[in-house]
Image (cartoon, rainbow, N blue to C red; front, side, top):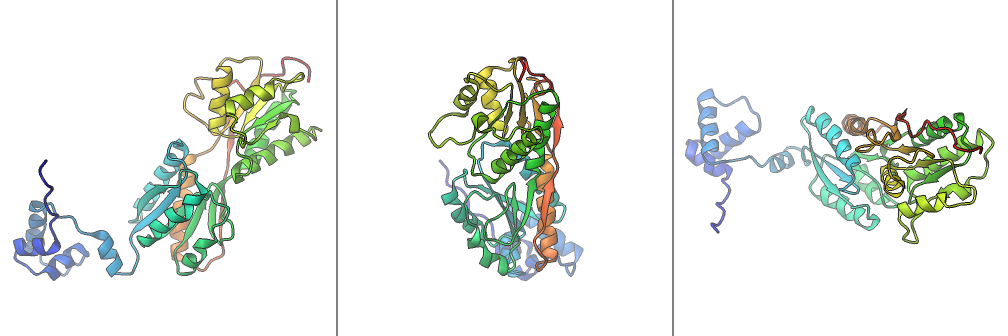
Length: 338
């Protein structure tokens, strides 16, 4: 295999164009103090050499930070994060910023290391999906002027802006839609229970049941996977009772997919609503609690931009609204008296 050529340097471009390296640097720094003819010769030389300027080095020379915003997300297989990233990238690009993406794979032990790797690259700001129970390791960086914005969950032990969903009200709306149809035995399936988003959704579920006089729903809740039980098994377990639920609320898109796998898409004697939309949900007639995923990313980008402009302001917490999308599965009354 042929060895790769060495990358052309700024000095190589200067030699080919017959100018000084300082003149080439002025062109790539955006200076207007270069004649059109000189600029043309430099651009032609750069094209012949396939030269690309080192923007990171340039940014570090001119202010100590790059033009990149780091985004630490969770599980790379979850499409939620890619929609968030798409919204964020578009908003940042309109203001001359780029996005650098990395992932913790939802491993709390990885969060500090991954965030530290981005900060070592002197990113302009850090956007983080917290998975660890403590983000205080970022406090010193925040005090040095690096904006930190969390997505999906608030930070712990850190003063940071956040962009989260209205998780509690979203689940409560789903349960209220079911109770209006007459359901009272409504199951909630989601794990793990200690995640902020799931705890908030569980709280909304319980709150809406209390509104119709149901004060104890523990027999219908399947919340954690500490024993290694799959979510499909949890669905089957909660329904395998002498007096089973007549409806199910799933706490995220993975739990919804597990319900489809466990029961099939045409279980018409059971009502169900899932938090998060997902592929083929419309084909399955699956009612969901939905939201604008890209708006989460756009809102996070706006928080970054506003925090760069006002580093000293009090933390701002943005809540993205949700709405119920009725597709049939959540509109079935109880098959028997509850």
